[in-house]
Image 1 (spheres, rainbow, N blue to C red):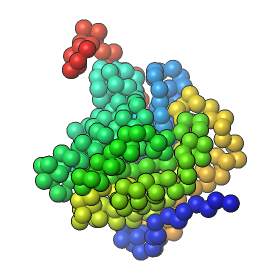
Image 2 (cartoon, rainbow, N blue to C red):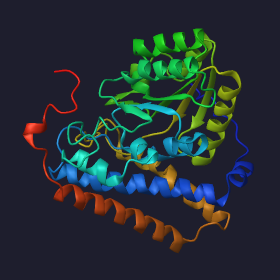
Image 3 (cartoon, one colour):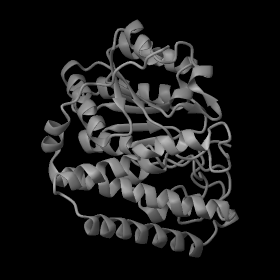
Image 4 (cartoon, rainbow, N blue to C red):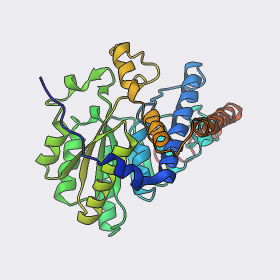
Length: 337
């Protein structure tokens, strides 16, 4: 029987106290904003108010939220088509994002990008092509090195389904060869659309680890459902990068609680399997941790949740009431046709 490799070792209680009440409250608050935003947007999609595709981040909130808490927002970020959460964390307003999902003029890309193509000054976009963001992130790391910005790195989020892509191998090789400050974060949610990682990635339990060794870079394997473990691992990796200027590969193991997209019924997973995984809901794990330390009451949690729910509802109303783009502006802001 195959055994899962171990996660990055974390002194849990020490890290809870290192992060402290205020940092954990911020992480919890941001996770609840993402959860409430995605839940309301999912409902709008199912009602036919949002067109195209919709890839929800529900279940994976601990990963990106913890990382940005550790490294800040001044770095370069590239991600997949599952990009709503990262945009929120970088400061794009819920109204802007929701309006973009609706295809409205007030949206983040004036209704032209939709769910998969959000952006921010530090976010080089969400990418609709599997693995398409990886060489872009590597190029951003080259820019950081070329401009001698030693306090800045490039972050590349990718899913487990992108690991077999040629762009991943080529980018790791180049980043290692040229000592590029790029942090490659594999959000291993176990499923590449409807294909389990065991059927799509050879030697899947050790694939990322062996790739890191092959290209001579450091590797971290984190519990992607636990904000504390993620924070500890990301901190260690970030400190290493600032010290060495070299790339690192991080694998965050978790599970999405929705289908690949909202139109995906997820019949490839049993209800029992999903129910078991949802016992480790990252929001509930952090809530319990904070309550155990006396840093959060049930009433305080409900108040934060209600506040974020109101923000999501407001964004939904804003999007519904916003105007459609004027067709005469179709070619504005387009670099090539």
